[in-house]
Image 1 (cartoon, rainbow, N blue to C red):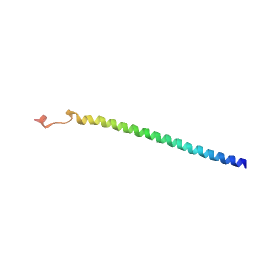
Image 2: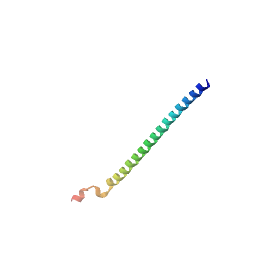
Image 3: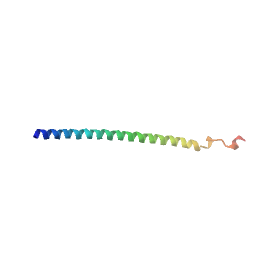
Image 4: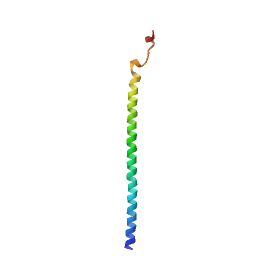
Length: 68
């Protein structure tokens, strides 16, 4: 009977290790995704910042008075 209890304890212990391994791998996966999303967000912000000054440059459009 003592052996049976020990075996049950071992099985439970193994299950908890497997679950925590799953949780650790899931946490790593989520962290990697968060980093990728943050990098993409920064990249898009930089692209928008580069595109915005081009819109406001005085030489980027032609006025009617320049054609006269």
